[in-house]
Image 1 (tube, rainbow, N blue to C red):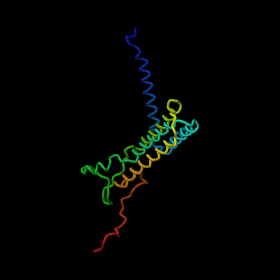
Image 2 (image 1 turned 135 degrees about the vertical axis):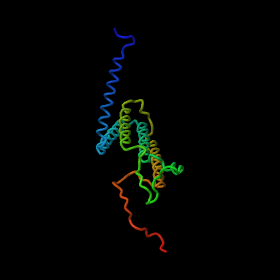
Image 3 (image 1 turned 90 degrees about the vertical axis):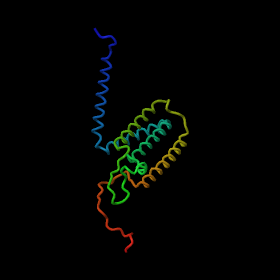
Image 4 (image 1 turned 90 degrees about the horizontal axis):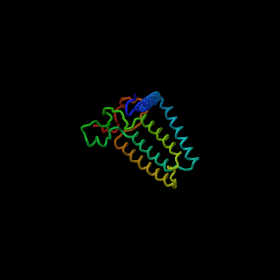
Length: 192
């Protein structure tokens, strides 16, 4: 005889299936991690498919605008350091980015690592693509105004981010291994 309130078998089977699917998905994510170029090529493909869908449907501009704002937010996280140097300057007890050539080298650590940046962008394009199949998200709007507003927002945000990078002397990109050799004595100093 089955206990009262049975049916736990179906939910446990569904939970087992969900856990197995999540484990398989994580396995493929882990295998994709070292293949940066391939991952980004797949994301570019997803972006192209989304752009073609929006172009042929001639709609879903609000979804595209929301996607653009989200991607801008992700880009800011990708370009920003884990610990804001502005806050570190206020709290002199903590470590700071090097400001002189003889300071200790501290590598740039992103607030949003590249893999998470890629994963969030890819997921955003996939969700936006699925949203284009539901007419409730196709809000009629004059898209050139949204595009102009997004461009202004992008320019102002990037200007602020670049000024922040210049002020605190950090570059969020590395072009290979950095060597700490000195270039020689400075010629700008006065001779006594």
